[in-house]
Length: 357
Image (cartoon, rainbow, N blue to C red; front, side, top):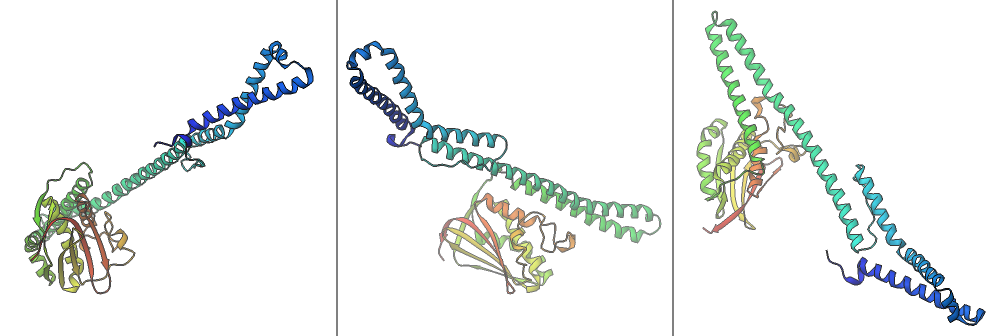
């Protein structure tokens, strides 16, 4: 940052130096006038005591320079003390910025550095907590079906020569447990992949309506089983530039979630529109309302509104977290609103064109 010369520290130090010299000279002149009245010949006095005159001049200059630079030195000492506190780990230290010159800018930068360092350490601490929480949740989520699977294998071994019908039942259950483990592991791997900031995505332009129509074909058996019907409304044809495989995963997660939790309403509505150069995809269902206290945490991994982890109540809470991460990879967002009439998930993605009907 550049400063006006007349407001900078260089000009201040130069002014202090010149002023100190000038006042010392005036002091000598004043002493000579006084000596002339007392001793008569000031010139001879100056010639005889030139060394003393020089010493007095230097002493006066030093005193005046010290007095005039005291404020600047105090500011530097304050910065030094503040840096010492920061060095000791007190990152909440704030050094007052009283003058906006180079020293003031240095002070502001030190304050900003301490603030950023504190934020970085807080993020690191939060990341550690998240990692510990994730390890705990993963351990729980994988241990439960694994323990159950081991139990059913023991039952099969115990009854394989006595009750084949029961063994077949246990085999079916074991297969379901294996599928659950496979799904959980795949979700965890996928979540880690989409959260990787270095992930390279390969995009192509696709029409939103065509993409959703293609996906909905695969959901027909699930909709029929839930006794639901669906409608797609499209105000305008709009396209998006996305990684198609990731976007399919996002929409599948959102639609599947809306079917599972919205089946009580018997209807699924998908509304596509263009707003402010954004492709807006609304996925609505008329099922049960999402509790207000759950909404802020709905897209966090492992969070589930039921506060339970039963695999029969809708998964392990990874689907929405994966969907949000995919949206963010495409510079988009996902939000949700819910009341006693409907629940609406709104996906906003950058649009590349808008072809009016």
